[in-house]
Image (cartoon, rainbow, N blue to C red; front, side):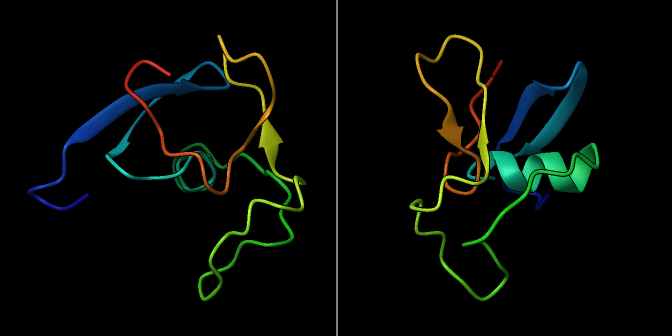
Length: 77
């Protein structure tokens, strides 16, 4: 996290995680708690298209599953 980035705290699989604002759920899960979320359309040089829906996750309070590759984290998520 850079010095000017706003930290966001969320919980993934029962673990508290602090990441920079703008981080996706997929990045937070893979980089902080080593959760293995499968993906097809995500890569370091690829912009997520949000179409394959392989990486969908459950977000508490959401009516539907959300694509983790493009959904930014939110405080207290």
